[in-house]
Image 1 (spheres, rainbow, N blue to C red):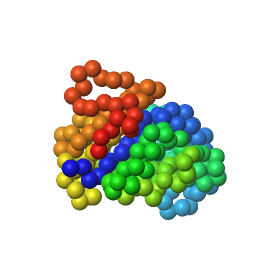
Image 2 (cartoon, rainbow, N blue to C red):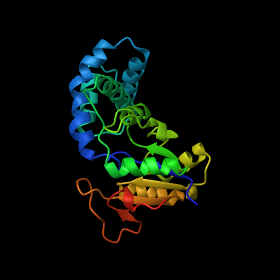
Image 3 (cartoon, helix red, strand yellow):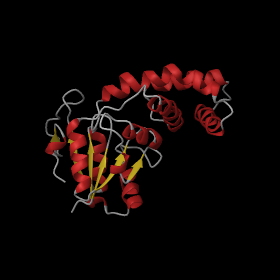
Image 4 (spheres, rainbow, N blue to C red):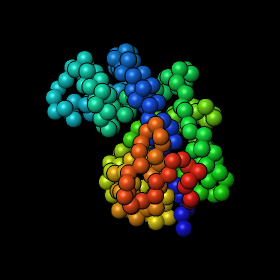
Length: 226
């Protein structure tokens, strides 16, 4: 019996284009100014040191900034990049320059599932901070009250079975009591290997049906049975 629903963001509750065409360019355009204005912040210093550690070099500030910009272009799922983007997006959302677009069916079903007593969680490659920002500034208002918790890649890679086992442990449920929703077939397979129930979202603008895919594929949340 399903007791909790674990939900991806990009291509699942929101168009991938919002991240690629709005959020990424927004962070890239502002990253240099943001870092230089906040260079003495312990949180920013920690991020800069993490970049140097990953690159294995004692990079200058400008070299760190160029590395981060390159990672944005390459869509790297790296914690220090996601963290710095989270800070930049926070400014944008709070200033009203950014608003998160949600698919209407996702909004309605999330609301319905919460009313029915399901525990709802988010698992995205974006930082937990960015996830909370996203859901607190949607066209439907602040939806953070619907969610019981958030997970990012600090718990593990989204394409690895062990990540889903860790999430189940964290929320205190068996994997088979959790339903995972994502557009990514590799993530779906990893969740199945961990023992979770799954649905793959196939949004017309974001994904295509995979022939002979052994797990359920639906075009929107209305096709999901919890």
